Image (cartoon, rainbow over all chains, first blue to last red; front, side, top):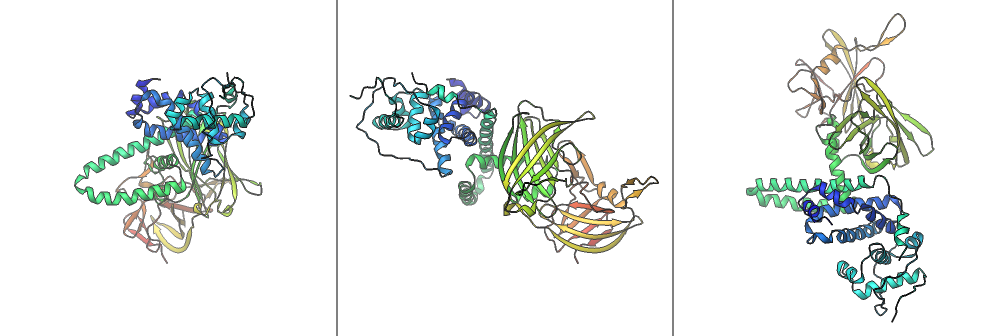
Length: 172
Length: 373
């Protein structure tokens, strides 16, 4: 993370911001594609993320969290766009807080189509954060204001939906 | 290890991804700059602060309400940015600017990426009446230098086609020159195209297909093959009415007899159609026909100047041909030269008038003719 670039961007330097954003734009596009499932909408999301993030970068207190902050905006923008397009989404499903899942690396075999079609937005978020961005549950809980248990249960439900064998997962 | 990364890598990255990022940042930057300017205004108007606040709050409420109903914030900001380009001094069609200020036309807000030429085309706005369609668009590229590229449907290699609901493809002919501005810093071209009316397709889903850019440089003309499609439903907001009134008045100017046939009012222009002794086509012994500039046309163009960057404008104080309406002088729109006319006719195009029932044609200092019945 180039903290200097973040600081320059916070002072309104759009060139510095673009340089910074460019490092993550492919990730952002792919993440948004998982939610909106088509190129045009995903490009709209990326444009909106660029707009919102540059407009609000002065509010970012810790430059080292720039990427996490961008991911949060990406998820919000993607869900906003789905809402706007009036697609059916499940925003607040009931969590089963009692099902724990440990911090070990969960082997996950998943196809793109399964990810796009089988999971709801919340489950997609959790799978992307955990397996694409490599966050720990603690980081997810802290950065995205989600109770740790909820993060785990959403992920568990997602994996359950995908009907994959979770070898090596300790349910105890 | 999970295979999720590999799976996500299968999502193809569009070539113009970074362009879209730049558009988003540009919109935010523009908004930021306008807030800063607004801040300056507020600082300069400190003494009038209270009154200003009262005005700003309803304005802000209106803006938010409109934004949430029609456009996302980023789109609203982009819309504003492009409106600014077309309302700037670089576009030499004052009628168009006046219509934009009044919020006329159907916003399109569509982007098309021409992958072959790496050109991002943004269709901004369209409106049409009985005689003309205006289409506002910009095109921009990272790789292709666009300085010498024009979408020239007047005398260049560029063509506008309409594909109607019945699938029939029609070539839409130009209506005058249109306006163009090239922004070197952004490598962006803004064009206001003029072509035949599409009003009869109201309520239908139609395709406008823009074919080929024309290249002009150092006496050379070339073509950049391209096809830019625009699909949209022609909405009521795009349609405006044109009011034609027969005038049938005669006058003499520089020993030539002229007859004013009609005046044509629209949201973007006022046309005065004249025939005269010297507006006729001349035919030589081989049957070739020639257009000759009439005395009236000489007078009309007398007040015209051309400057790079601002195009055709009016020289203040220089005699020419003007309209007067509601006490205001109405200037010619010189960029609307060579509007197709009937044989032997000469058409003068002016800005829209504020009062159609009060319209006077002024030729030089001495001739004043009321264009109302």
